[in-house]
Length: 119
Image 1 (cartoon, rainbow, N blue to C red):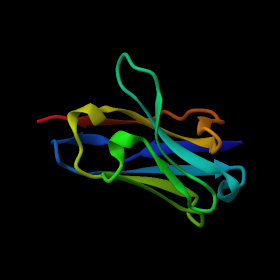
Image 2 (image 1 turned 135 degrees about the horizontal axis):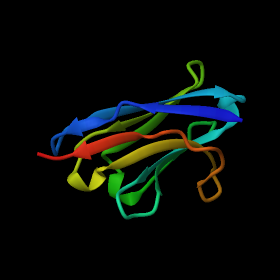
Image 3 (image 1 turned 90 degrees about the horizontal axis):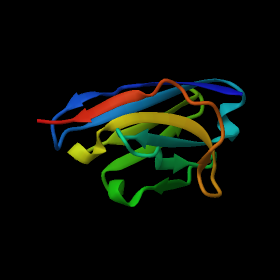
Image 4 (image 1 turned 45 degrees about the vertical axis):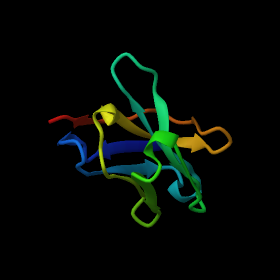
């Protein structure tokens, strides 16, 4: 099983940028599809972006063109570069292993990292 630790969140003004990191340990990281998910207060957790073991990506429509997911298998880390942030991006962001057929999360959740977009 893969253990995950998210970092990189914070408070940023609208239009700003953040880069989230997810460090993995445990199972063989390189064979897992990975996803970034988020949960805003009062809302369900949702997929933001996913990346397969071969590097194919998938994005929520509202973040296309603003967010970029990437992975470094040597460092066992997946990243989420977030640009042009909006207040509606405010949420706790989590990473997880995922089944790329539908991008349902398949592992245990970490503690997440808070992203707050506000002026």
